[in-house]
Length: 150
Length: 285
Image (cartoon, rainbow over all chains, first blue to last red; front, side, top):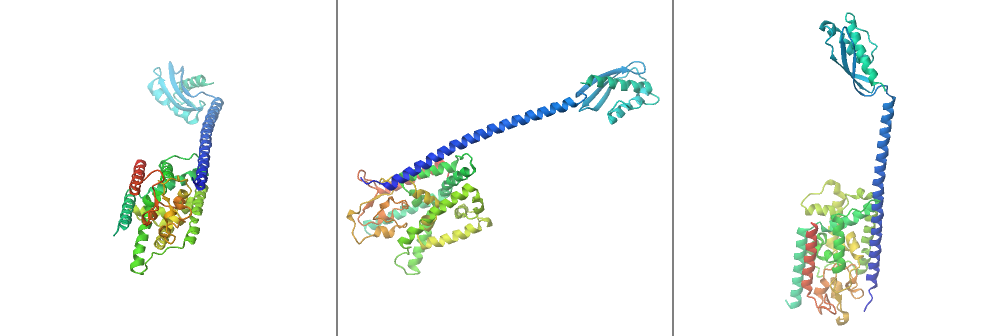
C-alpha cells in the first residue's frame, strides 16, 4: 500500500486550520457577548446618572412642579385660582371662581394675571380702580405658590 | 472512426454539455464559494464573529465535495473555467485553420509548473487584503466581478476599468495556454489544490503505468495543467478533473476503476454532476 504523504500532510493542515477557526469563533462569540453586556451596563449607569442629575435639579427648585389651587378674599367673597408651575416658572393661571366680584371690576382686575406670568412674580402692581379684586387674585396666586413650596 | 475515437468524442460532448448546463444555471458559483473565504478573512481581521451565511456554506460544501470527488468543480462546473475552455477551443481552431499549426501551442512544462505557484501568492495577497480591510481599494480589479456582470447580461461600470482590462489580458492568455487563469492565477484553485483529496480512484482516477509504452506520453502532452503523470499520477493537487488523460490513453491505463471496484467512468461523471448540481440548487446558487 503506497503511503500518500501528500494527502496526510494536507489532511493534517486542514484539520489544524479547522481547529483554529473553531477556537477563533469561540473567542469572537465570547468577546461579542462581553461587549454587549458591557454596553448594557454602560447604558444602565448613564440612565442612573441622568436620573440623579434630574433629582438634583429638582431639589434645587423652590417650587414643586404641578397645578395648585389658591384661594383669597376679593372685594366681598372668595376668589379661587389654579396655578401651573414648571421648573419654578408660572406657566398658567386660571381664575376659576370670582362670583363675588362685579364683572366690571373683575374684567379690569384679571389683567394682573398676565403681569404675574410675564414677570414670573407676585410682586406686581394692582390695577387702579379695581384694587381689591386684583389684590384678591394676587393673594390667591400667592396662596397657591405657598402650597407649591417644598 | 474507431471505438476509442468515438469514446473521446462522446466524452468531449458530455463535458461540453455539463459545462454549458452549469454555466447557464449557476455561473456565480465560484464567486459565491470564494466569497466565503473573503468573508472569513474580513471578519477575522476585524476581530468579529465569522458570519455563517450562504457564502460560507457554499465554500464548505464545495470543499467537502472536492475532498471526496476531486476538482470536478474546476473541470466541469466552474463558469470561468468553461469560458476559458471555450476561448481555448476557438484559439485551437484559429491556430489550425489560420496559422496552419498541427499541434496547439503549449507553454513548456517546466515554465508552467513555476507559474502555477503564482496563484498561491494571489490567494495569500487577497486574504491579507481582506483581513486588513484594504480589499476595498481593489474592488474594481476583480475580473470575476466583471465576468459575473457580463454573464448576468449587465455592463460593468467604469469603476471596473482595471478589471475589464485584466479580463481582456486573461482572455488573450486563455487563447495562448489552456486554463491560463485556472493554473496560474485562480485563488479558489489554489485553495482546492491544497485540499486533502481522498486518494481513492473515485476522485481523480488512477494510473497503472505498467502497460505504458515507453515512447507514448500522450496523457502528459494532453494534460492542460502539465501534471507529471509518471511521477505523482493524478493525485497532484493541480489536477482539475478534466479527464482528458483518461479518454486519450490508447491502452486505458488511467481510469476511475480501482483494485476493488469497477466503475463506469461516464456514469461517475454523470453522478458527480448531479450531486454538485443538486447541492447548488439547494444553496440557491
